[in-house]
Length: 151
Image 1 (spheres, helix red, strand yellow):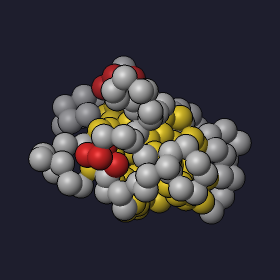
Image 2 (tube, one colour):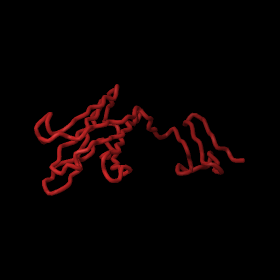
Image 3 (cartoon, helix red, strand yellow):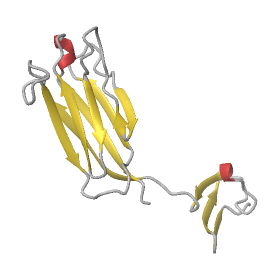
Image 4 (cartoon, one colour):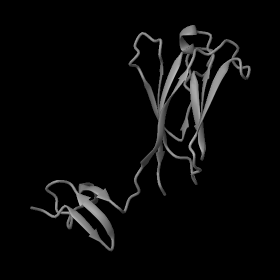
């Protein structure tokens, strides 16, 4: 039986099954206190009704939702977004994004963005826009996970 857990002055290390933690390479470790970990800060769902006509007039052609983190990071945290229109022919079709800034997704010749998100140190702002093609106006469902990098 091999040693799988090591706790010493250098930290805590846990190796993969069958690998001796004392001689393990970094790729053979399930956990190493040398590296930070991501913790779940919060998750949720935003439901946005179909976007009203009038884009880009503020308040009349787009919808904005702000989610506050409840803490302020020294840098923008990573956020995972899964976005879908809930009235599409394929309701299981999700567009997935991860990062600290989600570019607007464009469609058609008029280049009006469907949606986008900006992540700040203490919140993210998600926006959907009115589109001349009705099927692009939602309603929208946005699943999000905010990661706490615990630095």
